[in-house]
Image 1 (tube, rainbow, N blue to C red):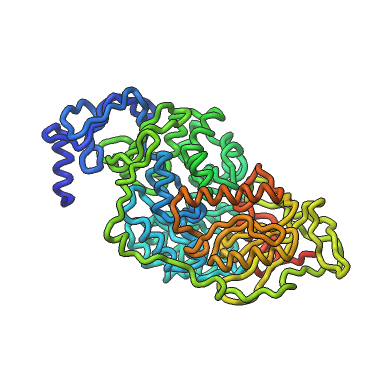
Image 2 (cartoon, rainbow, N blue to C red):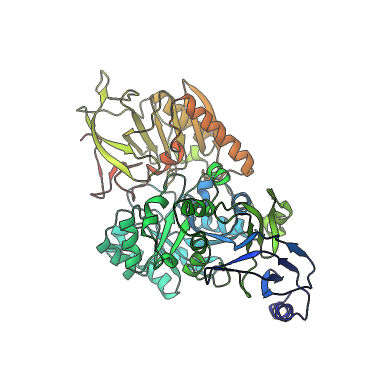
Length: 585
């Protein structure tokens, strides 16, 4: 139907001259504009709310029976790749949790595949009953201190701004390049500013004075605050505060004390990185609402943060509220505090009801069916074969710089500890001291680079864990007790063309293949979840703790833009000095 015809129909429905496609009545409507509850029938035409009031003529009428009706939820910053699902399967999961729109940064796929990775995510998102908006990766690679699969300059990103789902530029994590006025970074920022596009920040470890540089560059959001003081700094300088609650980074409780009646409209919820099992069991930003309410935040304020605030932050003028002229993205819940979801509507179509996903909403369109599967280049071809002695770490002294894991945090500690050495003065992992070997093997350009370090906090008693998901360049990262198990683990992931594995005593105990860029599975979300559960069972047999996720924690140990000590394929990296350092202290 032509836009003029749709508009005419909508006005006729609003004026009660024509029947609505759908009427939802007898619900308690959460008005996020006023912070109040209102009553009335919701009349929907062509996926848009035509009116709220007294409506009797509708092709379909649904009785909400006194339940609460809230706007569809919006996750303001998420990396779909962290779910290890294709966009279609990801949509099936988050829609069950009332999320009808997400803003994603596909920089994981971009770091592996460049422009093709971005296009893949846009193509695979088309036609889904979930609005997947994209901010273009600003830092591919994220820093010059690692080997990425691709590099994207301003001219590579520019054509994507014409896409209707592209909102702006994603998290600017290369703060040194911004601060120095690097021509490449300035070009990307200038393009976004000239187009009045949104720009996301990534202010990890950045103090209040340095935030001025972000604001001056046109950056208006940040998701890296880890305490209430950092949260207040962002709000005071005019940023939107993204309150993150993901699988590893769980910042909500620490940030919530900064939220008050005067600034809550500048706050929104994000997940950033969340694995499939947590998405299924906890949820997405619906979990953030439940957690915030349990900590004392008013339920309507929490819902406002997950809907209208996020929509306004990104200029989504027809989403985030229940009002005439807005998309009919609606969630019916039994309880505002517990966010017990009964039904979910995307543009007036029910996609989830009474615990059951409405699969017909995911019928494959002709355009989707014509898409070719997107695989990475062969990982075995992209990395040099490893010699038996490739992971040996000679040490002249027994005092080392050690990466200290902080459970459920992206930040690590820079420790200096005594370590064990064998008779040839090479590092000897110690389960008693909880000191394991950590390796990052370059997998894109056959450089032969292998970064080696000592890590503390995984608690493994034996074996090794490995992943081709290693933010942001996604080389292969492995932690283990013996070189033999580590080599087996790395070789197994390479043979799978990407994935995760748990190895012990010369045997692969469990694995998950991720053939799409070494990041995503082509299986259903239920199949991926079952295999993840198998990996977790294997982790327990080798002594991994259950109070944090070892695989996601492992993947972020390779991210040099997060304090304090990390590792890349080029070696141990110290955030404070912005340089590689030796393993020996």
